[in-house]
Image (tube, rainbow, N blue to C red; front, top):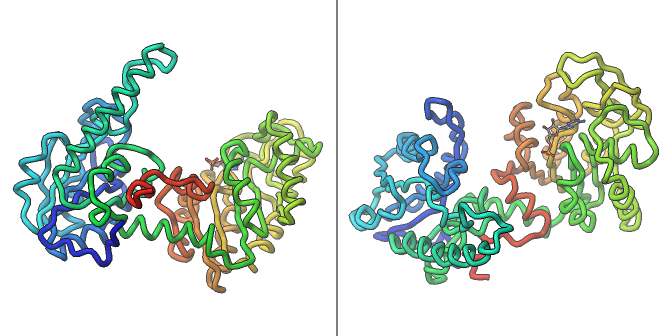
Length: 417
Ligand code: AMP
């Protein structure tokens, strides 16, 4: 694998997998250009060296069919503005040979949404998984996916993957394409390198104490990460909706709080494992209970073990917040994924805000803090403290899989693993 910093792109055509899956309003206007800005360091380095750019991305889920509402032509002007140069566009990513050949140093070509072709994701379309012909259809699709990737590769001299958000997918443009470049002509972009380094800080280069805060709605969706972290962390805070599964597992009455009744044994098992491994497991002891799932509900503070019928815990209580702060403030490595309450309701943000504040304080005192996974990123943005933590990841699923210890296909393919 080559290194983007040292690579000289002069007179080279670089095909770059970016994540331009940006949100659009009903008129097709970009409402948040964070992802476009995130790719700029890589794109500007290539242009500054005297290279030309072929940009490829997906947008939304067109499921292998052309869908004008998901056309990347809608963001062409935004990309041009961000790069400060004109951007050419080809409305079919399989028909870009001529446009790519004509590119001069410093020029930029944007390809139409890769997922207008089913080959990008490599899943057979129009056939059910239980159909006896499914396996053959899958094999045939894998072959056409290779052809699709080969065509994309033929446009360029060098391949750069800077799309961390899709690095956990083995798609044509994120992984398969890498097979068609020599190892000295494929590399990770700057954004991808930053994400990989942030994950390494959490998983490999751990400064102790290490506190992980896992929140959100359910234990079941976080179990892989919780188990992986159990071998690494000193303090593990489990908060948000998960709290009530743990409380019920211990014989508590949780009213109508969110609770996974089929995960009570799992909760007890997590508690047992934490004890065996010497991990300080911090669970909420009290909560703000509400008499309905709404911002204007009546509230009361109660023990998570004794929530009245008809009431549900929607936020962490004051004693829980004190315990969370105690586990966060002395930490030197911090990972936060998932809110401590229904932070979308302004009246139930206190627990999540307290966690964000404690992380900012610990970061000021020298901790490395990584915030990732959709909702905790929304939290730090809502509380205006995204710049006060060490790193906010752009990857949702990709970040969580990396933290679970899984090898991300998009990274492995470029490294030639
Ligand atoms: P997840 O996608 O699993 O990370 O969950 C994020 C969601 O969990 C957010 O939309 C929160 O509103 C929700 N959440 C957090 N705490 C609670 C709670 N106590 N009850 C219900 N939902 C919650």
